[in-house]
Image (tube, rainbow, N blue to C red; front, side, top):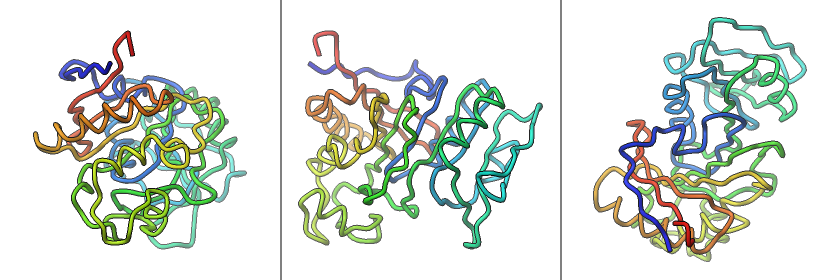
Length: 258
């Protein structure tokens, strides 16, 4: 059985299993907005980083942004900064490079951060994706993985407007290009070992269905989450949210009889 619990009480870090340790974000539909929302909501010292290329960090969401020449470059110390983002330099305009997993772990430990939030793949600001052959780059020591997908893809045509590498999405989910994305497709994506569960190893997995911005989407994604939990024991619980508002809409959990 599945317990559907209202979430006025739990805060965002608690909901996403991001109170401490190493938390990685994969998928599409709001990874960076979720990281920023978590950094703002967390009471401790937060490290933001990435194992892949990404758009530049926002200065209004961080206290310090560190641009290293490469992963071998030493990390400066920031005693007063609470939210620190670190990346490597790249020649690509408006983008930054990622760090190796070992480098991120050293910075996390040496800086005595309470939590490290890692963007572990790219999606070019699209709302849905499936992993590439060498994705996602999740460190083996990750404590929690948060696969993200946007509820806004439901009822839309699968194409490059909404999907990163839509051909790959179509292939994994058994779709035709320009066919309609349905509830069943999101269920398959989130419970598929080659989809949202790829490379999660022994980490706790807490999917986030993001952009749940109205009651009809809440009801629809609640049922999606319920079926996802039935399909995969690897998933701890599912969060419905609206990360641009830093809001947890609902948490769907198994009950004790699960």
